[in-house]
Amino acid sequence: MIVSYVNAFQFCNKGSETVGGTDQPQGRKRKNREISKAGQPAEKEGMGKDAKYRAKKKVNVFIISFAGIVLNFYYIMYFQVAQQELEKEKNDLKAENEELKREIGQLKWDRVGLEKQVLELKAEVKEAVADKERAVAEKERTEKSYFQKELEKANQKLEEMAKYDPFSDLGIFSQMDGSVSLPFLLKLLKTYGFFLLLHRKKPSPPCTYYSS
Image (cartoon, rainbow, N blue to C red; front, side, top):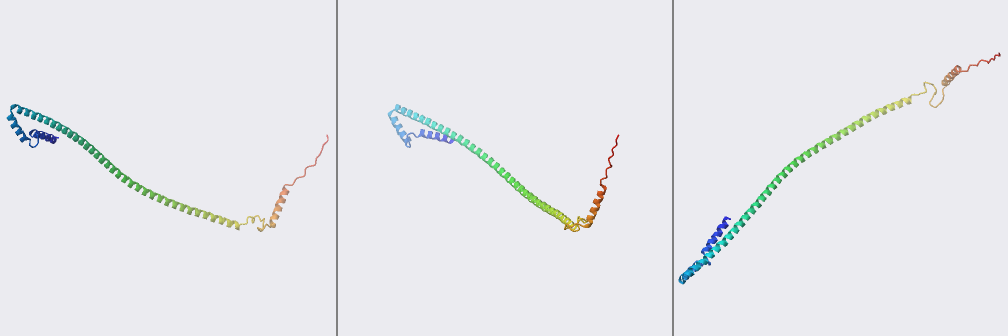
């Protein structure tokens, strides 16, 4: 702003000194000589025109300088606001970047923790499967030994039953082919005969009628 203002006023002063181009001073001297020869009124008229021109020039330069100052001020304010917005966005992006870095670090720790938990769960599952397999094998061995013992007991009983004759004490059958032994028949007749003697019917007394 200050540079524009100084340049404008320098241009105004330079324009007021050199009116009529680069050769204006020499031309003005010649004009002054002619005016001096012509008389006093011509000189006053030339001086009035120069003063009006210089005043108009200063006004134009002032307007241009003021417009340049306003434009410079506007641009400075605009760029300052834009720079502040850019700084704010930069700080926001930096904060977001830091937040993302923290989240990434937290996710890495979470991943490590999850991997550790997965390994622990795998080890627990492997151990549980091994325990289950051992329990099943032990149960199979126990059941096998139990059933084997029961089978051995059943086989032993079958062997004992095959050797034992259930009718040998009674003497009913002499052999397993179905033939009846003689001692059994004698015992049966003796027992049945004794039973008949005990339960035979006694004779009823004779009926007597008395007449009145």
